Image (cartoon, rainbow, N blue to C red):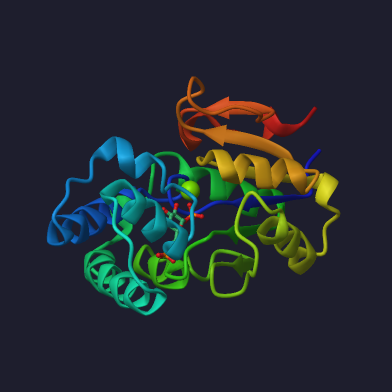
Length: 213
Ligand code: B16
Ligand code: MG
């Protein structure tokens, strides 16, 4: 029976991919090329700078590191404006019920996100104080698929990694969880995701009993 749960943020707790997409697309338009929703799939779970590098590669643009920093800051400014408008209505289906179930069972849970904006997003949707620990892009040095983000979460919760369950919507995140030696539940389209131990469309398909083997 699992002793702790680790949640990815974007795509698991809340759907921020659309806000990222709008901001990246605006940046691409300014640079003179088109950025599609299919392109945006490649950015899920990927850090801000790595995302920008993928975007520039799509546009065939070569610029200095300094200019890259400025563009990443510009994108983030627009993205932050969008997430400042978020509220509880954007919490994904099943999340609140499942978190309540975990609280009732006394199972601790942490956030494991690549996003530097994770604390702001959790505050906007009023879940900041609900999590027992938060590991985000501000405190990790190695991006998913490196297991660092989830190992840190387990450490903060003082639970052995093998007793942790990870919920992830990104391929790199599923791999990070497996590298950490954890049981991983893929969230989203099981035809796209691979390597997880179980798959659900969203958290409305999840109950603690399903994790008890
Ligand atoms: P930021 P997650 C990730 O969050 C997103 O999936 C990814 O699209 C984004 O580029 C990354 O956070 C960095 O976000 O620019 O806010 O630091 O899925 O790991 O919760
Ligand atoms: Mg995600």
